[in-house]
Image (cartoon, rainbow, N blue to C red; front, side, top):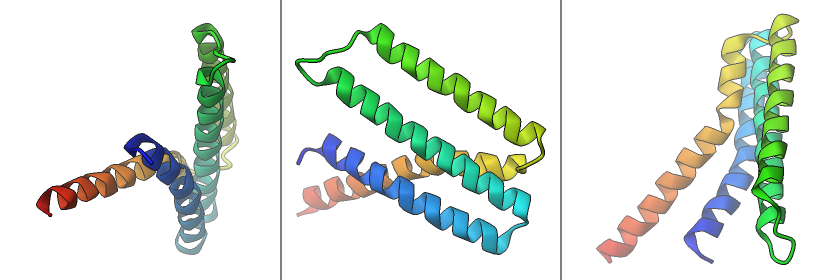
Length: 128
């Protein structure tokens, strides 16, 4: 399996693991609005990541190559819907913005973790 596939597989799995762990810790350690922010932010970004991966895989797999306009339209539609959901969550005072920002960072943490693991593998391979 090449490095790109390993990273995608790792990030996809670790998104759900980090989302679950962050949500549980949020409800144990913080107030309800902060915990709900972590939960909804993590859920929103994780689902968006999976939908983006599905869209790109479908668009770039022959023989059904999609136009880049279709991919961009889907991306911007998801972006607008996500922004509207975030607006509703904050305006309705359902979540605390700090918790929401932390939850929205789940995918970033997954990507950083995947990068660290791959760099470590490359460095250990060179050392041997």
